[in-house]
Image (cartoon, rainbow, N blue to C red):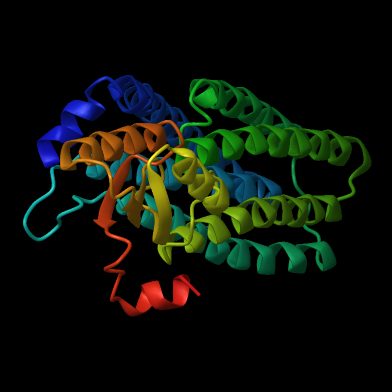
Length: 313
């Protein structure tokens, strides 16, 4: 059964291998580029006393953290399964998304507190320097985002990285504008205000990451799969009488699994039934379900499991 499954996946390998490999290179490049910039930005932030720069540095640091987490998760997802971890560590990609969201929320809280106090007690800062440092940020973030552009639909971590970096480029633009305005007007409160605006941007972005990864953590049906349409897809196959007890859940941010019980036409020989199962699995493969387990039953000996009774009402 298992071997059959792998030979079956063989010609689907282009699905799984390349995007992850390209993504790996993008993650490494993104991590290095952003790490260097975070250090520069943090130093400038402390020297100029600009909360906007520090918030932006915090934002970029969260990027580095999320890129690093995703990269580790991708590596873990490739680890071979063992007797204890029969799925390998695929789920770690989901935990990475969750951890990342939680860390970001904590950072927002800390920076937000300081920024709000700065709006009420502004301190003089060098707007010109702030603008120059932030403009480098636009280039760094936009450049990094481009690394991920090709694979942004590969999985939530890659998409998260892409959107994150893109938002960062916009955020840096905001800081540049603020710096220029401060330089010519001495509205020092603007620094705290921009900082708060940045944090709200991060909060909005983080929220969907948090909800997505929480959904996956509790094995909810993945966003790119529609239960009803999968059911219809299977029922349309000639020879399938009925279907019940279907579960679909994410094994990782890129792979989904399904289990179901089918009743096939009684007239079919065992061999024909196996061919049919093979065909169904192939169809599912093209519909974002990478691992399916199908249990066959006969109509006159229905499923005894409690789940079936409730699902079959």
